[in-house]
Structure formats: C-alpha cells, structure tokens
Length: 116
Image 1 (cartoon, rainbow, N blue to C red):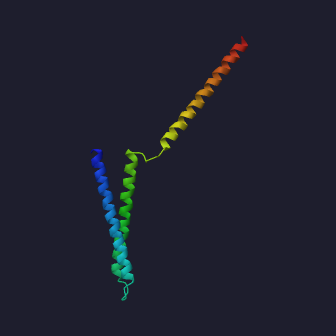
Image 2 (cartoon, rainbow, N blue to C red):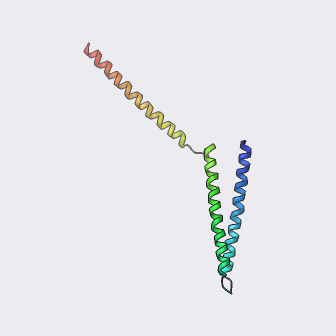
Image 3 (tube, helix red, strand yellow):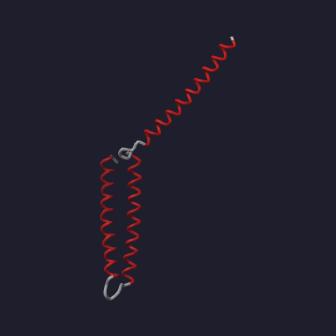
C-alpha cells in the first residue's frame, strides 16, 4: 500500500471519528432532554443511550490511539528534535571516552619516556 492510500484510509478513519463524535453529542443531548422531561426520565432510554455513548467513546479512543501510533511509526512529529538531541548526546559520550583513552595513552607514553 503506498503512502497516499495510507493517508487516505487514515483520513477516512479520522472522518469516521468526527462523525462518531457528532453522534456522541447527539446521544448526550438526548439524555439531557430525557432527564429534563416533565414526565420524568425513562430509565430504559437513558440506559441504552448511556451504553451506546460509552461504547462510542471507547471506539473513538481506540481509533485515535491507533492513528497516533501509526503516525509516530513513519514520520516524526513536526519540530521534534528528540532524536537529534539523543544522537548528539551519544556522540559527546563517545568523544569523551576517546579523549579519556587518548589521555591514558599519552600518560603511558610520558611515563615510558621518563623511564628512558
């Protein structure tokens, strides 16, 4: 699958999330209307809407987590310098190690020359 297809399906999944969010808001509104009804709320209606609401929230969370995870796998976050900073830190540690080894070699050479 090429990147345009991946992006397209990703956009489709995010569009579905958007539609689900609209439906979640409609469910919440329906529950609020039912709670405010002059005859009192119908328990079965409230239970069904709340159950559907919670399932949709879980679906939204699942989809968004997967989209974020897949976005991280193939492209870095914009303006993220974490990998560059870590790479620089590793290079600095390597240089410090090499310098310490060179200092040890120099010390050994100086000691050898002094012994002569």
